[in-house]
Every structure is written in C-alpha cells, then in structure tokens.
Amino acid sequence: MTKVIVFSAPSGSGKSTLVQHLIEQGLNLHFSISATSRPPRGQEQHGVEYFFLSPEEFRSHIEAGDFLEYEEVYRDRYYGTLTSQVESQLAAGENVICDIDVKGGLNIKRHYGERCLAVFIQPPSVEALQKRLEHRGTETPEAIQMRLDKAEYEMSFASQFDTIIINDNLETAKEEIYKVVNDFIKV
Image (cartoon, rainbow, N blue to C red):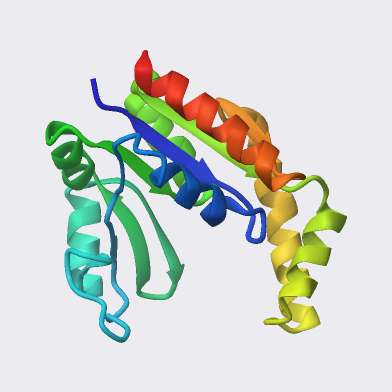
C-alpha cells in the first residue's frame, strides 16, 4: 500500500535538504503538487510546480471541500493540497511527500491516519536556528526575528507529530530520517 509522508519544520531547520536526500534514496517518493492562487513565476507551469488557480477558483474548491488542507497566506493568496491530487498519486503507486506547514501537516495526518507518517524536523534550539538564518545572509534582522517568532510557534506543535528529527548533525539526521521513512513505507 502506498503511503503519505508529511514533513513540517521551521524555516532554516534543514527540511528541504533532508527531503531531497530521501528522494535520492530510491524509495518511490514523489512530491504532492500543491495549488496556489498566486500567478506563475518565471518558467513555472500549471500542473508541474503548482496548480495555478484564480482566487475565485480556489474559494470554489474550498466550498466544495476539495482540499486536504489550505491556508490564505495573504489576502486572496491561497495555498493548499487537493485531495484529488494526492489520491491520484497514491492510486498510481506513488508514496506522496507533502512539504507543508504544521497545521496543514496535522490536517493531512488526521485525514489519512495510519497511512500517513507526520515528521517534524526541528533545529537543536532557537539559538542555533538564529545562527543558521544569520549565516545565510539573505534577510534583515527584522525578517530573521519574524522567522524565529514563527519557529517558536511551529515548534509548539512538534509533539503532535509521529516523529521528531532533531537536525543538529546533518549526517545523523539523514540516517534517522531514512530509517524512519523506510521502515514506515515497508509496513
């Protein structure tokens, strides 16, 4: 039986690096394609990076109950996971990865129950996260503080996930996440 694996983490926790590592391990893992009401950027294509919907179309799908989870990030700027997309991938024999915020991840876990593994990637501490974000050199001190405040909020949900991987050593975290996901898929 194919499975759903949800990954949530504060920004800067190393989630993208760990998920990319997993995909390269030949575990038949495939990203879910999310929907958004934002316009495509650059070379993005409908049905490849995202399903691009107008705000009206997105709200219509919300009213129809078509989303496993969704969020209005800014006014008329929605992101969400369509139930039909995940179901289509599962039916095609793919294990589906959802890289998503904590509330959305927990909603997907509630929907799929034992067929879903919810993984929370956590930095060793807020201080370590702050150093990582500062080391990137891509954001203002104010933006970093906003990310840290959000990270503390997100980490308050960690105990509701099936497993927590603390990314204080990347190689150790890669080994842990591979073992957890591989064991879950094999069951």
